[in-house]
Length: 233
Image 1 (cartoon, rainbow, N blue to C red):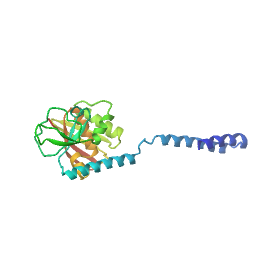
Image 2 (tube, rainbow, N blue to C red):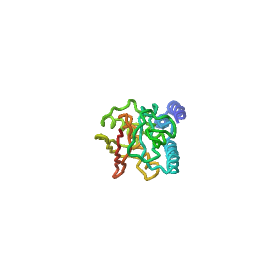
Image 3 (cartoon, rainbow, N blue to C red):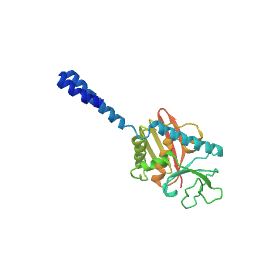
Image 4 (cartoon, rainbow, N blue to C red):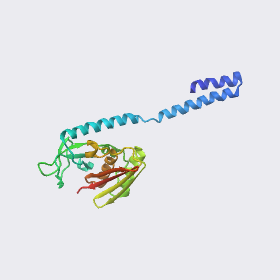
């Protein structure tokens, strides 16, 4: 359209001496430039491709957890406890009294996290773990800094939520996400690791507090998602 308009306009102006047709040619050039600019705004990976990749990984991880019969809540670990890479571990046995081994958990699929022989878990990468790298700086251990970091990722970078409110009281974090586009579903993956929104909040909180974090409650009602996290000692 730009090329045709650039040729058409001079011909209409100098040869035919028609102002209306000249304007049509100039309009064609402007529309062509606008179309080219809009085409460049499309992300390198389309939203459809990103959704396909996310769904594939979730289904594969969910199938693994279901095959092993694991229903325990995942524990999100900061990068300091996971050799520089934040991840989540899913304990193989139910144990409410977790005593950490006191050393970094190795970068393997099946890991030992505690002092007891049965303290074994599966370590997985989550949507929250990946998004930590998108933060310009790691937030501090306050509710306002965690809220700012979560809003930056969920609203600014990913555009999957409208706003985020975070309250930190003792060892619990109560977060409310408005306008969430990824809701909680009653599937095996979400039961263990939480929804992608909850996963991002848990990973950010764990990194900010430099402590393990577990998603204890997640519910969606009237356009709002309420997520409760427990900060483990």
